[in-house]
Amino acid sequence: MNPPLHIALDYRDWIDLFSHYLLLSLMSIGGAISTTSEMHRYLVEQHHWLTPSQFNASIAIAQAAPGPNVLFVALMGWNVGINAGSIPAALTGVLVTMVGIMLPSTTITYLTAQWGHRNRELLAVRAFKQGMAPIVIALLISTGWILASANHNAPTDWPLWLLSVFSGLIIWRTRVHLLWLLALGAVLGWFQLL
Image (cartoon, rainbow, N blue to C red; front, top):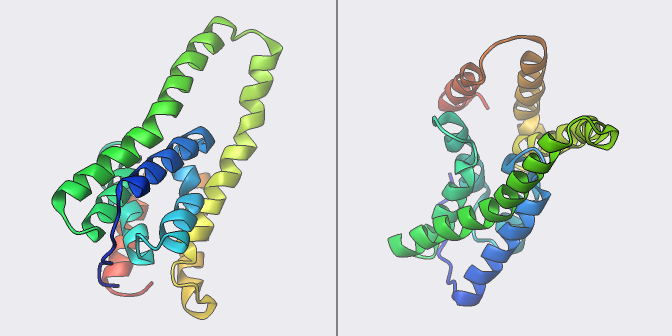
């Protein structure tokens, strides 16, 4: 595991992080998890505010924990703040990322759900719902792609790819609960089989 980073953030960086998460919220069709590839690009590759290990751990911990899966956004904000060197910065990171990701999508979802319910018999509303399904699936596949490429090394990443495909098939073809798959991934990771 990589050691934590030591970064310096000023108010412009926090505003930039907040505005980026506002935009991600507008792109989060299918939930915040569908934008993880862009989060990875922004936090890990562009700004170097998180290590790849911190990024992947944020997602894994939040997915394993009870509650909404959007908690990975809070963990990413927390890790950015911790890398900036303090608990108050970590709390600021949680606040900035969570409000940023939740505010636009929640407001739009609330307003459009009311409108869609009132107009549910319209052909355009039914067509929109059916047309969004492939987009959500494609965004989730891109998330799997990022998580399965954790080490950026094809010879060592093949078990992650295999686990991703295996998990996807199990989810698609069976009624096995996701927590069992997460537990299997945790056990494999614990024994360093991934």
